[in-house]
Amino acid sequence: MTFRSTPTACTFLGVALVVAGCAPEQVASEKQSKPITVRTVAVAQQDVQRKSTQPATVHAYYSAEIQAKVSGYVKELKVDIGDVVQAGDVLAVIDVPEMQLQLKIAEAKVQLFQAQETQAEAGLELSAAQVKSSQAKLAQAKSEAASVDASVAAAEAEFNRTQDLVDRQSLQNRVLDEVRKKRDSEIARQDAVKSAVTSAEADVTVARAQQSAAEAKLKASKAETVIAQRQLAELQVMVDYATLKAPFPGIVTDRNIDPGDMIRVGHPMDQPLFVVSQVDMLRIHIPVPETDAAHVDRGDAVTLSFPSFPAEQAVTATLTRIAGSLDPSTRTMLVEAEVENSDGKLLPGMFGQASITLSTQVAANMLPARAVRFDEAGGAYVYLVDQDDTIEVVQVTTGVDDGREIEILSGVQRGQKVVDAHLQRFTTGQKVNSLN
Image (cartoon, rainbow, N blue to C red; front, side, top):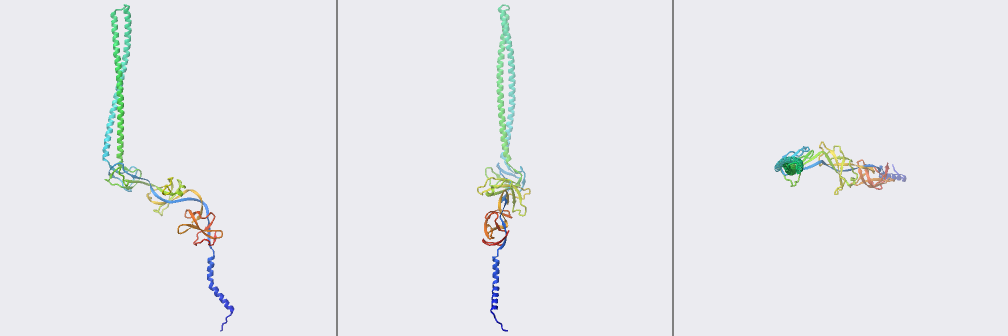
């Protein structure tokens, strides 16, 4: 059989071969140029409850470093590390024999001055009795003087009357002599009584002076007794310092002495004798940066988490204290929260993370967290989609991030659309098919 070739047949064959050879490249080109369909979300403005997440450290509610105020040897050691103590429990006893002797001497002095005070009181009572006695004698002398004065006046009157009668020769001179003797006797008696009154007045003056002296002596004795008692009390306080006691309920967290150690007051020690910490209630110290410090208020809610307990629920608390000023070296402000710790799980010195819910609510531009990407350096960016469905890679500054939504501080504005979650990476100028 003979085959013939015709121009038409050759033409169809050539076209078929060309089409067969070029079809795969054309299909690939069409796929690459076709816009990718993406879902977009718009930047939305909403009220945001700001939070400040900062490191936190656990501190004992109270922690006292126990030092000694008296020198001596450690006589007794009552507690050790980890022991639970109550307020007033004895931690250790320091032997102070010299002070004990001084205390006994001071006690003897108090007894001596008290005896002298009793003696002075008796002397005052005696002098007071002497004053009363001398006053009674003075009163008696004055009474007798008044009686004598009356007798002298009567005798003088009788003498004058008798003198008149004698002058008229109605009586004899012998009668006048008798009356004169009687008058002179009364006058002599009057002089004696006056002397007795003067003497009694002097006795009263002396007795009163003695009473004043007795009062002064008693006052001095009482003052000496008070001084001695205060010296005794001071020594007793110093002796009491030899017994070291717990200032509040807590746990002994440190001990740096042993029985027989010499404690020297005035020689600073590198470490305290004991440390007692109250840990049934704890203080959580949180340094708040300057940017958030102005928005923190007492009573703000705090959520605390600790890496030591990763599987446990976060602890909730409230801010109880605010320092009110920044630390110049760190530019942070210290705030405190209190946490109940009756089970003793949390330990002073532990680290954690505190998330403070700030009291100020603000209107913020927000995007879903899935719509914000981060580069290798940690910088945030979004794929901005314009009205022509053209991509623009935009760097953004982020703020509050609660894991679901992120605050956008700068880079995009409210209402602008960005690409939602998508595995594809885009470049500026790339066309997409956006779905709202």
